[in-house]
Image (cartoon, rainbow, N blue to C red; front, side, top):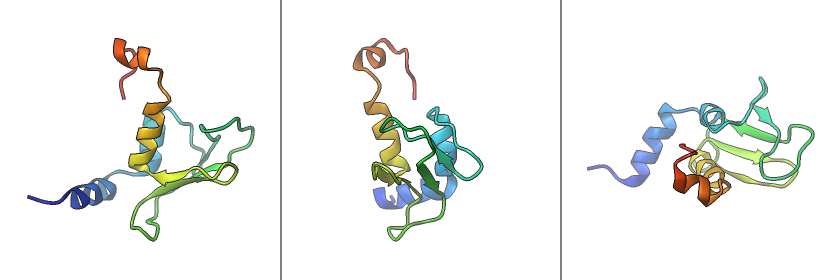
Amino acid sequence: MGSIKQLREDIENQIDIVDVAQKLGITVNKDNKSLCIFHVDHHPSLQFFNTKDRDGMQHYHCFTCNAHGNMFELVKKVQARIPPKLKYKGLILL
């Protein structure tokens, strides 16, 4: 049986962070940039990097608020922003 780390790497190798962001409802332009979902943004400052960083992970970074993380952290942060009442009623499915 493989480790959790190996499972994460396998998922990372099969899924693009830009695809994950788009499935979460984030509009990503051709330059892999988006309006940041973590602050009021009027110019795309959130960038998605589908090449591996020094930790071997695809990642995102906002050049305004410094939000940063990998695709798993992005999913967690987006889910955390959904009001619990909507999650409980099953109105939001991620």
